[in-house]
Length: 94
Image (cartoon, rainbow, N blue to C red):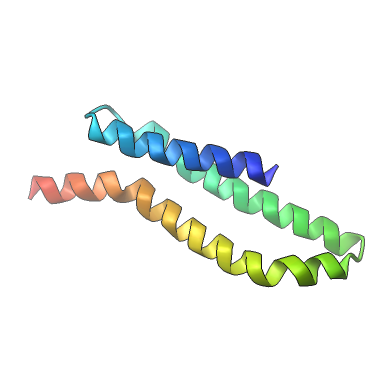
């Protein structure tokens, strides 16, 4: 499920940037992008929680050290890309 949520977050982030570029209202798409980023993180946490419940320590040892860094980096990138239009609007008003 986290792949679906992540894909939607990625697509909506680029739609957000496109809508800003063409001058349309982008704020709803921005909210969708950030919301699906959060849902991706929750879904990944649920996956890891399931592995803990069934004592699948091998899967945890294989995935968690790398996914932690990846999720942090992708979340920060998503936040920055989604708020870029707001920051550009603030810069243009000055």
